[in-house]
Length: 331
Image (cartoon, rainbow, N blue to C red):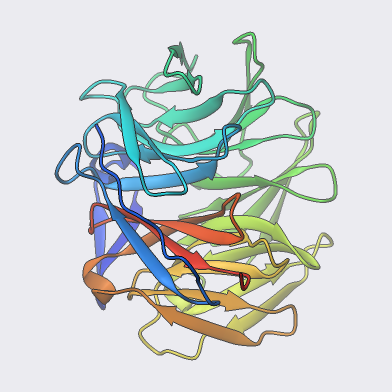
């Protein structure tokens, strides 16, 4: 069964039939001074319609991102210089994370592989044992292995740095696991697009699932933050916190058109999220929300976020063919 992936433009939800359909060089000078909330955008000039999806900080003090639309892995330096490396036109990279070995690891949703790329651009690819599994989210686990979701295969996968795989089927059928992140409890937590649940998997492979409120359509991204795991239930215009006990606290966002997508813990210790309606938001543990507009708004489609090495939060623009940066701490 193909994965359903929650893409949106403006107030309209766009659903793709497969994760593969979800989804070089330029230099731009950064500002001399940036106050909290200041936003800078760096266009991806190496390819049109690159559909930048996942993003992560790399070991080289740069940001690395997956270009789902053109089959490339991109790198943007903190000064805005962009380079990228091809993975192939039918690979569909979507999620990316820094591994335990000084390389970047990513999912190839269309090709059904896990990729590894060094900061110098050397690429290695590992076919997943389950065919057409639709790998999506990926994260470094506390066991120094890389964990990932198999959205079409309805499994959670694990790969060691030597390329050895393990796979764990989900208790709920057709759940479509999507994003995954390590928690402070020593386990991995993941969202289930189709079941309105969040799951937890121990490093030994034991899975527990927790139901979300009834209107939590398409629980999307997930990240560890103050008090538990934070996630974006895209259909609810909210950000939710799931305690490690499974208790859910909902924080309704102030803008009624909000379409929360990516989420991360920022360099200030607070939770930041990307809003496809055209904002980047920050939320405190007690639910206080501050939003920062992205130039061009919903036409840019802010999608995934990650803390950078420069006191800022970086994000991908799904429809804007650019990488954005918002200042998280004053400088």
